[in-house]
Image 1 (tube, helix red, strand yellow):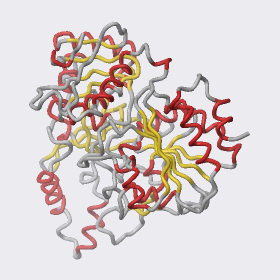
Image 2 (image 1 turned 90 degrees about the horizontal axis):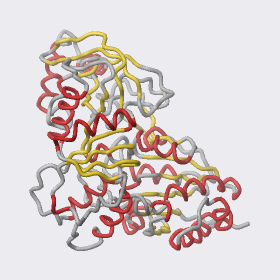
Image 3 (image 1 turned 90 degrees about the vertical axis):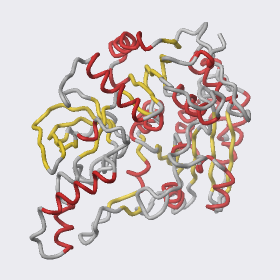
Length: 468
């Protein structure tokens, strides 16, 4: 039996024309035994069956002599991938990096670890989020991923993503889904296909049909965005006055973890978070038990480096399970708390020190000037140490300098939400300064809409965006 036949046999639906073509290309990709670096780019709209194809693919790879590894750029995306594939997925950074143990280093650094796997297909979901800018190691994440995968013999890389989503922060394209970029920079052979036909099972979904319409408009030089709420039962328009009732309904039906609000700016997300805590949870405390937080800067201090997670990454979600004490130090506010890792259920709860100042700032994390201020204040405590090396060693161990930077996570910017999926999503585009036809806004809206799995609420949306 060839891979194409095995895929068809394990596929739970009648394949679309696009999917049938995909199975033929995957057959060639799986059967090929070439010394070349082989990359398969599976691009596709929301609702076109990318996840269903992946679930079928992992069932057959062993039959054709391949192991597989499932990867995603964030903890939330890895959790979603594990959920639909019913197989264990890991973050890319946990799989390919390890911390360097260098006592003389000014700060923590990472090195790409060797890849001992052969005859393995590395499958990466949400590939549009992978940047080629330096992140953890000495190179960009994409470069390190490529060199890691192809260090082993007869390994292959399957990149799954959606080019209509937002590209990585500060980049104009998603390099990992750009065939010309991959060929030019990594001298690899690239197979690619884009799924555009929405599966019949998804055609009753207003979320997916609107996502498809937005995706088609993104192919135009000047997108004309028109959304439809009728006759769909999973899509709702609402004014700000109805928001509190809507959120209470969603929290009761789906739970806080499975509900989110998506905004266009940190300022708006901040306002939403404060409003939700005050008006819906009636919380007057600075921070409280059950508060839902997002880590906004990578932190390598609190977790054992051999833990499942390795370190706490920007974008990870945690829940406060206990408040131990509050503290004022060095002109900043801190709290010692116990946290639960939302996207890593097997990870034990952990006591950490968090910085409270970042909860209410409009910046994405603690601004540089404030970070320098904290550093200088802490440094004064070690002024009696003789050498710079001794001071550096103590600074690296200081719990205040290493306090977790967090924000409330009831409302997020779209970049922070990317890679995740929630049952109920409330989207507020805020004040629209640019033309509604703009490509950047269309990409933002598409990414926000496709975060919703079950119900989508459009809050205070401009009337011009509707065609019904």
